[in-house]
Every structure is written in structure tokens, then in C-alpha cells.
Length: 317
Image (tube, rainbow, N blue to C red; front, side, top):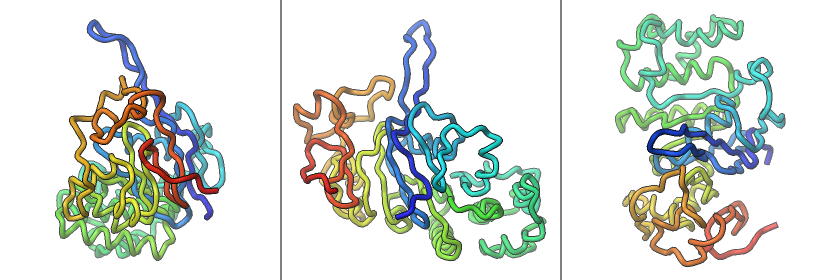
């Protein structure tokens, strides 16, 4: 398996200011993540709001500075590259946002929006009709403004703009959550076709576990800045091992009840609980979960990793 994108011990810590009511502290938005996305693969990243998914994506794209750990892209360490050295790599890693209306400048036509990255990198502008055709839009759309497009058409324009630079990696941050269900299905079908034709790799962030199961080969589950379970989508979403993954699935009846209901709300990331960070919400927690350090993410079967004291198995070489 050749890695296109890899993270080792990746962390992002934010400092909070001291106020009259609160002492200065730090918040670990991402806490020591190891992740691998192979060439041509599709990795889903799931978890509750605020768990660190979007921060992790922006770290991997080097859009925010890294506090600790390393990032490799195309076999090259990009952790400490200056922006001038990163610029040529930006063409090969593109981000597609959740809200296409916010991602498009309302003053620009579709042609101007799609042409913008081509102009920045000094590339040929004659491919605009071809790019629109690839995402299922007619060439006449080039002369329209965003307010003249539907939500699905706007997202297709954003995808065309990302494709303009011939990327190898697309980071998709909730790309269908702002769309109607029928339009979601069309956009997901488009993304599947693009991946097959172009050999693209996807890092797919979503709250929708059914979508992740449909789109992704593998899935990583995040909780409080950590990966708590990772493996093939069919295995993780079909037979979850970590209590948190089971709780996520229990909230989506059509995927099958996981049998675990999480208690309360996620803890304050500025004051994480000792031991396993999920233990205050886990109905299965034991004393060993409450004491000591957080459980390590370990391989319990080939290609399956879990960070839980309660999950059996053995390390696989």
C-alpha cells in the first residue's frame, strides 16, 4: 500500500487567554493522530461536532501550523515547508467546503470562479467548458452568477474549480450536508465517478455515517481530538468495537443499533478527563478506564485499530 498522505503523532494545541473569570490554559484540538491515506483510497473521518475533524483536515493541508508530529505527502515531509515551497503542492491537494454558497464569490461568474486557480498557477484557461462538462454542467453555465444556480449546481462548480489544477487529493468537508437528499445522491455519484476516472484520493469528513459507508473504503472515528477506532468501512460501521462508535451508530437506526447510548455531552476539551476521554459518557466504563492514561490506538486485527481498554484482541505484526 503506497501512502499518498500520512500523519504521525499529529497534534494541534491552541492557547486560551486569561480572563477575569478564567486562567490561561491550552486546548488540544488534535491530540497525537496517526493516519494513512493510500493512493486512490477514500478515508472517511467521522465524529461529533467539535471532535477535531476539520482541524485535522486543515493540518493535513498545512492550512494551519502544526504543534507536533509530522505530515508526509507524496512521500515528502511537508510539516515544516515554507509557503513558497508549499505553493506547487497546493495544486495536488484541494479542499471542497461544506457550504458552496459561501465558497463562491457572488460577484464572479462561474467562468471567473473556475478560472481563478488556473490564473494563479499560470495554466491554460481553455479547459473551462471541459471542466464543467466533467461535473455534469452545460457550458452555458459559465456566464451565470452563483445566485442563478441551485445548491447542487454550486457544489458542482466548486468541484470543477478543485479539479482544474489536476489534484491527486480532495479533502471534502461535509460536501453534501447543505444539499437536499436527492441532490446529495447525485453529487455522491459524481464523486464516485471522478474518483474512478481520475484515480483521486479522498479524505471525506461527514456526520452522515450512511454516506461514509457508501463513499469510503475505510473510516476513522474521532473523539476529543483522538482517533478511537479505524478500519474498513464495512467492518467499523457493520460491527463497531469502540463504545463511542457503537453510540454513533445507535443514533442512526437504519444502520443497525450499536447497543450503547452515550451519556451527557462531550467534556470541555480544555479540561479533558483522566484516563479514557470517553469514560464519563460510557455506560461500560470500568475503574481502569477512569485511571491512568488514555488507551493507545492498537491493532486488534489486521487493518483494524481501536483505542479501548475493553476491546480484546492482540497485536498483529
